Length: 307
Image (cartoon, rainbow, N blue to C red; front, side, top):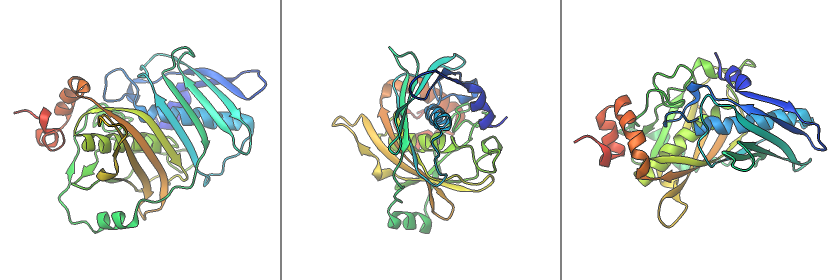
């Protein structure tokens, strides 16, 4: 089964008679779409669902979006999305051409789980060329980040997962990666939700490494302006020092990351808000230890490494 098929099944939407284009329905995440927290949906997959809902409404509204025209999706992850439970979805065109905006709500209106939007984006500005050149030059000592067994992004046993473990050194986090078969699209290009899932994962690690603490993604902003072909290797890349504190307490961090072709052309860019808190350690550290060598935990979260 491919991710295209999974999302087609998960997101059941129907047009609603109204003065403006509008869709309503449900989103039901199957178990493979889980995050590192048992029973909850992966934040990148949730953002991909927001993007997919927006794309379907644009089709209904007859608004064409060029494949090379940047499309920006934002998802505020207010509460975890449960697995296996139909969640109400409302999608509405809130502004018309040329400056259209699609609003997406997951969950009941009085207590939404996720509030998102899809709109035209700005062309992606490449990361500083000197940084990419330094990374490419690189004879460096690199290590893999820890991972889980069933997470959609990093889970080594998830049959629909990316099974993606990033490399890191003192300066960068990256992976030159060929997406697995479930992420291949029927039109010969990668599933259009792939950037949202992958950029959430690398953004989480950029935030965690900067904060030196576990946590959660609370907001994702992803701009996509191209799709790689099936079987093409892509580069996921971020600079550790670029993750910046979003508050004085150092709890929230803004982590920028990029999805590039192997040659370095931008396909997508993400900005992940990472909320650090040791309160999440009891849920995350035991499965990380189960799915990773102890030395991998020691390098990134020494306070939680087994003695």
